[in-house]
Each structure stands twice: as C-alpha cells, then as structure tokens.
Length: 80
Figure 1 (cartoon, rainbow, N blue to C red):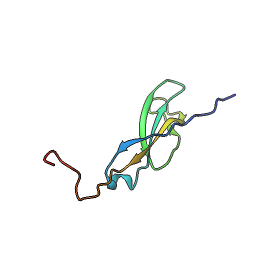
Figure 2: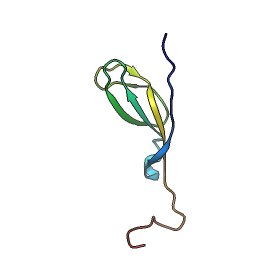
Figure 3: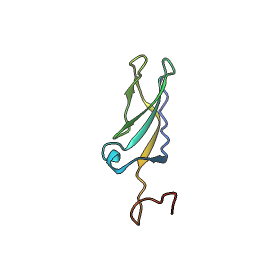
Figure 4: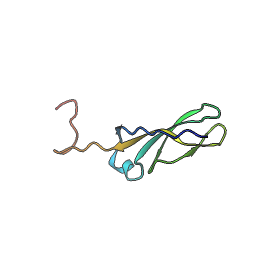
C-alpha cells in the first residue's frame, strides 16, 4: 500500500516576466529509491525522472513562481 503524496505550495520565488511565460511551478523532488534530491521548474505540477536512477518520482513540494510587478516604471534601485 502506497502512502498519499502531500504537496505544500508556497509563493516565494521571483522571476522575470519573460521567464514566467514558460514556467509556473518550482517542483522539489526526492527519489524514494536512492534519496537523490533535485529541483526543477515546470509549467505544471508533474512527476520527473530521478537524475541518478531514472525512476519516476513525484514532487514533495511545489511552489508557484511569481513575477514582481512595479506600479511606477522600473523597480526601485539603490539611488531611490
């Protein structure tokens, strides 16, 4: 009997608007077979293949990737 996967989603990552067009989730994986950990960005929450043993692995954490928006032109810099 397999245990259910629990996904915890947080919004913490900031990427450029151009990057966000193709990426929406940062998925965190841990292979249950060899304990390899990795992070990969996808346009959806999905399984991935372990880079070490090539077995299919479900994400244990998935984060929304968001874009910071600025109301008045460019973002504030050190001289503002």
